Image (cartoon, rainbow, N blue to C red; front, side, top):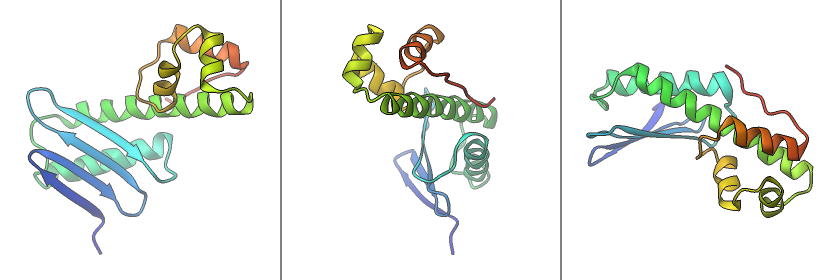
Length: 144
Protein backbone atom coordinates (compact mmCIF):
# COMPACT_ATOMS: atom_id res chain seq x y z
CA UNK A 1 0.00 0.00 0.00
CA UNK A 2 1.29 3.48 -0.86
CA UNK A 3 2.17 5.78 2.02
CA UNK A 4 1.41 8.99 0.12
CA UNK A 5 -1.00 10.17 -2.51
CA UNK A 6 0.97 12.44 -4.85
CA UNK A 7 -0.08 14.63 -7.76
CA UNK A 8 2.22 16.78 -9.86
CA UNK A 9 0.40 19.25 -12.08
CA UNK A 10 2.49 21.81 -14.00
CA UNK A 11 5.02 22.25 -11.22
CA UNK A 12 2.52 22.18 -8.35
CA UNK A 13 3.10 19.12 -6.20
CA UNK A 14 0.42 17.99 -3.76
CA UNK A 15 1.27 15.22 -1.34
CA UNK A 16 -1.11 13.65 1.18
CA UNK A 17 -0.04 11.26 3.93
CA UNK A 18 -2.70 8.56 3.80
CA UNK A 19 -2.33 7.58 7.47
CA UNK A 20 -2.50 11.03 9.07
CA UNK A 21 -4.29 13.24 6.57
CA UNK A 22 -1.47 15.80 6.46
CA UNK A 23 -1.45 17.47 3.04
CA UNK A 24 1.42 19.58 1.68
CA UNK A 25 1.39 21.53 -1.58
CA UNK A 26 4.38 23.18 -3.23
CA UNK A 27 4.62 25.49 -6.21
CA UNK A 28 8.17 25.98 -7.38
CA UNK A 29 9.30 28.90 -9.44
CA UNK A 30 10.95 32.27 -8.93
CA UNK A 31 9.30 32.55 -5.53
CA UNK A 32 8.81 29.13 -3.99
CA UNK A 33 5.63 28.72 -2.02
CA UNK A 34 4.24 25.99 0.14
CA UNK A 35 0.92 25.46 1.87
CA UNK A 36 0.16 22.90 4.54
CA UNK A 37 -3.02 21.62 6.00
CA UNK A 38 -3.91 18.83 8.34
CA UNK A 39 -7.24 17.12 8.22
CA UNK A 40 -6.05 14.62 10.83
CA UNK A 41 -5.25 14.92 14.50
CA UNK A 42 -1.57 15.85 14.25
CA UNK A 43 -0.64 19.14 15.91
CA UNK A 44 2.48 20.93 17.11
CA UNK A 45 5.76 19.03 16.99
CA UNK A 46 4.14 15.85 15.62
CA UNK A 47 2.72 17.83 12.70
CA UNK A 48 6.09 19.52 12.05
CA UNK A 49 7.89 16.16 12.15
CA UNK A 50 5.42 14.65 9.65
CA UNK A 51 5.73 17.66 7.32
CA UNK A 52 9.54 17.42 7.46
CA UNK A 53 9.35 13.70 6.70
CA UNK A 54 7.10 14.34 3.73
CA UNK A 55 9.31 17.17 2.46
CA UNK A 56 12.40 14.96 2.70
CA UNK A 57 10.58 12.26 0.76
CA UNK A 58 9.60 14.77 -1.92
CA UNK A 59 13.23 15.89 -2.32
CA UNK A 60 14.58 12.33 -2.28
CA UNK A 61 12.16 11.32 -5.05
CA UNK A 62 12.79 14.36 -7.25
CA UNK A 63 9.40 15.99 -6.66
CA UNK A 64 11.09 19.16 -5.38
CA UNK A 65 14.36 20.61 -6.54
CA UNK A 66 14.71 24.38 -6.12
CA UNK A 67 14.33 25.07 -2.39
CA UNK A 68 16.30 23.88 0.59
CA UNK A 69 15.00 21.54 3.24
CA UNK A 70 15.78 24.17 5.92
CA UNK A 71 13.61 26.75 4.16
CA UNK A 72 10.76 24.28 3.93
CA UNK A 73 11.14 23.30 7.59
CA UNK A 74 10.93 26.98 8.62
CA UNK A 75 7.82 27.45 6.49
CA UNK A 76 6.18 24.41 8.07
CA UNK A 77 7.03 25.63 11.59
CA UNK A 78 5.55 29.08 10.86
CA UNK A 79 2.38 27.62 9.40
CA UNK A 80 2.02 25.23 12.32
CA UNK A 81 2.39 28.10 14.81
CA UNK A 82 -0.18 30.23 12.95
CA UNK A 83 -2.60 27.32 12.87
CA UNK A 84 -2.14 26.63 16.59
CA UNK A 85 -2.68 30.29 17.50
CA UNK A 86 -5.80 30.35 15.35
CA UNK A 87 -7.16 27.21 16.96
CA UNK A 88 -6.69 28.68 20.43
CA UNK A 89 -8.30 32.00 19.48
CA UNK A 90 -11.29 30.22 17.97
CA UNK A 91 -11.74 27.89 20.96
CA UNK A 92 -11.52 30.83 23.41
CA UNK A 93 -13.97 32.88 21.32
CA UNK A 94 -16.47 30.04 21.22
CA UNK A 95 -16.05 29.37 24.95
CA UNK A 96 -16.75 33.08 25.54
CA UNK A 97 -19.90 32.70 23.39
CA UNK A 98 -18.78 35.43 21.05
CA UNK A 99 -19.23 35.73 17.31
CA UNK A 100 -16.36 36.69 15.07
CA UNK A 101 -18.05 40.06 14.54
CA UNK A 102 -18.44 40.76 18.29
CA UNK A 103 -14.80 39.81 18.98
CA UNK A 104 -13.64 42.00 16.10
CA UNK A 105 -15.70 44.94 17.38
CA UNK A 106 -14.33 44.60 20.92
CA UNK A 107 -10.76 44.34 19.61
CA UNK A 108 -11.14 47.20 17.16
CA UNK A 109 -10.10 45.12 14.15
CA UNK A 110 -11.95 43.74 11.15
CA UNK A 111 -13.95 40.51 11.24
CA UNK A 112 -12.05 39.29 8.17
CA UNK A 113 -8.82 39.75 10.11
CA UNK A 114 -10.16 37.57 12.95
CA UNK A 115 -11.26 34.95 10.43
CA UNK A 116 -7.80 34.83 8.81
CA UNK A 117 -6.18 34.52 12.26
CA UNK A 118 -8.51 31.68 13.28
CA UNK A 119 -7.84 29.85 10.01
CA UNK A 120 -4.07 30.18 10.49
CA UNK A 121 -3.69 32.17 7.26
CA UNK A 122 -2.35 35.33 8.86
CA UNK A 123 0.84 36.02 10.78
CA UNK A 124 -0.73 37.95 13.67
CA UNK A 125 1.42 40.52 15.48
CA UNK A 126 2.14 40.15 19.18
CA UNK A 127 0.26 43.42 19.82
CA UNK A 128 -2.89 42.23 18.07
CA UNK A 129 -2.67 38.84 19.75
CA UNK A 130 -2.36 40.53 23.16
CA UNK A 131 -5.51 42.57 22.45
CA UNK A 132 -7.44 39.47 21.38
CA UNK A 133 -6.26 37.45 24.39
CA UNK A 134 -7.19 40.33 26.69
CA UNK A 135 -10.70 40.61 25.27
CA UNK A 136 -11.14 36.83 25.55
CA UNK A 137 -9.51 36.77 29.01
CA UNK A 138 -7.24 33.90 27.99
CA UNK A 139 -3.61 33.03 27.36
CA UNK A 140 -2.43 32.04 23.89
CA UNK A 141 0.63 29.78 23.88
CA UNK A 142 2.58 27.90 21.26
CA UNK A 143 5.04 25.06 21.62
CA UNK A 144 8.51 25.95 20.40
